[in-house]
Length: 475
Image (tube, rainbow, N blue to C red; front, top):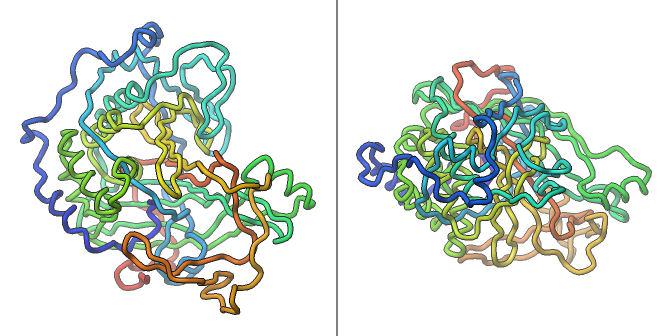
């Protein structure tokens, strides 16, 4: 789930109990050491030896203050208190995990997973993966290859990332995550709509190591848009290329002291509880599996995959735990390699995918830079579509609420009560154009611009736009 609200879910004491009982790594009898051989590498990959050690994928320099955006329809409003919101809020599932093996730096070289310097967000990547590709990969898609060179397996990619993730230093007063998110929306006139990708301005989270120092979330409501697909671009041009949806919002800062700082399924542990997570893969798998089952009793494998995504993307876990996440993912049934890809910001990496099952299932791709053990982005693609999907990715929708009902919010109708997983919900339908993307379309993404420890201080918005999560938060 995107970290779109700082209001912490309740009712997940079982997960917190597991965290509280977790012991330091050195006390774990099954604590894993790095073996000196890499038996998982295939003979074909072993012949593709890189000429030098894996280079670090560096993030572009960014200012200490970066703002993000709330999801439309949230309680937050520009310039005023409201429920602090995260960009591109969407439901996510998590997945399953088992203990994996480790890989040495020499194994990373044998796998040919050399990563070069990164690029500025939004521009073509200056870096590249050491691969025999004929052209640049598109976001979430493998690059076209002119040769039959083998694609590294998911296991090789993830175990290489595990070794490099364990080497990251842990110094600084804040765990800072800067992220840009995007989500597909329907836009244009209702009679001739088209799909756009709404790209939110970056948001920055500053999670304090000290329980007495405030943690901050700095965000705005700003976004820009672009046509989401080639068919949408054609429909937009046919409409006369009108201005695409955009908004410039005020920057806001939300703070709290000594509270929860990240996500573990539906729960939000404190910094101390994250630091207590076990780094032995089997013990970490047990914690993650329990968090996944608290979310949904259905596809535990998919739900656990989502919890691992949370840990890599948001959470102040130590390098050993981060390495254990990659090792567990390497043993997760259904995880496969997409090969070399570029993320929504144009940065090069390797795609690791899992496709869910059941109604509403999505194909999720994690874009990983194995040379540095970093998650660059996660992307969601549609796996199903109704018949007669328009090339524009959108179709005309309702112009008024059915049955003479009034909108429950601006342009939102509440139609009927439905029950899912034993809980009752009011079904909501938006007025105006309806998003109907073709199968395989990018539906949403989160791109991590920067994640790491820093001793810098957050540059905050004006005092009138700083709000307490405890006293000002709503909903």
